[in-house]
Length: 105
Image 1 (cartoon, one colour):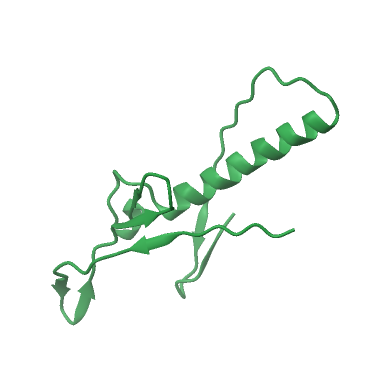
Image 2: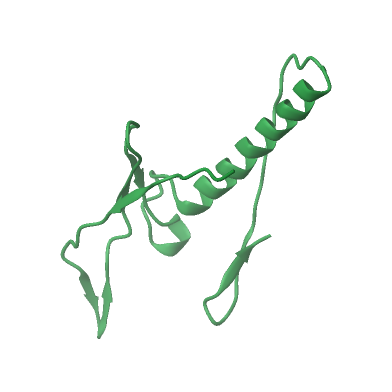
């Protein structure tokens, strides 16, 4: 069984700042999912994004944490285990390599 999810991203060019010959664009953008409020997203502060907005790393970790809880609750339901409450405090580290590639560890 397949489940399709759709996301639309909207980014509009703003006047880039010029740093020598390198253009620096704003990292802020909107994520739209039909029938839900838009998300304002930016790069993490480390990557010159707006620290007041969600960033992809926040959203990835939130998604994994939420999915983990839902999987746990599903397993408990299958085994008739009553869950009274659930808490999780997740952390992830983004390891950036000298060549610009990276991974979440």
